[in-house]
Amino acid sequence: MSEERNQEQTQSAQELNDILRVRREKLAAYQEQGNDPFVRTKYDVTDTSQQIRGDFAAYEGKTVRIAGRMIARRIMGKASFAGMQDAKGKIQVYVRREDVGEEAYADFKKWDVGDIAGVEGYVFKTKTGEISIHAVSVTLLAKSLLPLPEKFHGLKDQDTRYRQRYVDLIVNPEVKDTFIKRSRILAEIRAYLDSKGFLEVDTPILTPFEIGAAARPFITHHNTLDMEMYLRIETELYLKRLVVGGLERVYEVGRIFRNEGMDSTHNPEFTSIELYQAYTDYKGMMDLVVEMNTMLAEKICGSTVIEYQGKKIDMGHWERMTMAEAVKRYAGEDYYAWESDGQAREAAARRNVEVPEDATKGTVLIELFDAFVEQQLIQPTIIYDYPVENSPLAKRKPDEPAFTERFEYFINATEYGNAFSELNDPIDQRERFERQVEAKRAEDPNTTARVDEDYITALEYGLPPTGGLGFGVDRLVMLLTDSSSIRDVLLFPTMKPLGE
Image (cartoon, rainbow, N blue to C red):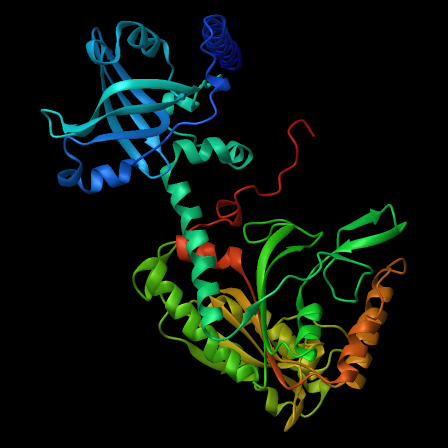
């Protein structure tokens, strides 16, 4: 079988080489005739396929000019049909020798599927009822030297699709629809936040040092300053500096970089949106999350009930639970019944959940949540009041200082966003930063992480009570386009170069 496969591969490679040779010979012939398609710089387009097909009554008999890629053709002697694809869709073109001229028609018959062309003609319907353009002139605008995959039957190999997204967009129309929706989602989010009085800003991508947060940064070198610099792992600290400065509602659509693992929901570079609003708290952010996500489902999907990977998700209905309530419901353990850290560790042992020997009640609660709760949260759910142990930037609850005013929201057993009543006490913030850095040094003695002194200085000038929210755009797009992998919603996901 392997010998037969090798023979098939050799034959396929030879056929491809023949195709490449023939296409280059055609190009050389055009150039020798002084008809090089690559020297053309402009083609005036008047209409799109979508406009023509969508309103035939207005277009019938009208002269139009379209441009796009030839995706199919059928040669029939003195007349031929071609399928043209532009940015908005597809339309059939009828090309007849007596209309375009003998020389132009002879050239047209030498064109290949994949070539880019301009067509001028009038709109009509064929005998079979197909809306078409009767060409009066055809112009080759760019020669395709490589054939489209599988004679335009589709590009199916996922690795090739991600590496050659340009081909994927040509041959798989649903892919283009996904990225059009992504753009619409971002536009709707911006419009929503702008309507609430938020100001979109930009903050640095290159930062001068590594902070103590758990995420691992990418490191680069600035030649002029002769110093190491770090690609940002968040936009939070700069945005809150702006709130200190009096920009009371700010947000950023920011590219984030984390030098960590890759899977179906993680890519080393991704897009997040963080927003901060003065004089509100995490409860205000909860209301914003519910309103914004309900709006997005309605506008992008046409309904608050959407389908994701075979599951019906009701984006118009949100449940809210504290972490302690969720652990009691799904793990059967009551945080408030534990009288000591030791009793909490005993509860973890009963549930066969491993925790550190010195685990606190808060740490145990977090571990039980991860083990038993998250997988149950299929419908939109807000989990709030997180232990202080894993919330270094959130404000403590005044009546329960072991907890913070923080929430995360979950859909289909996946975390989609994170929000706080922001910590604005500079003394408490310094202590938490210092503990973060110490923990990182204990894990990696060579770490360069340190306390962000300038951020502490900003807090010392006074940060008003502030609610903050951060969420990943890519996961949200996955949800609203029913995509199973983050690579399906990134135009150019991170890939190892071929041959390595």
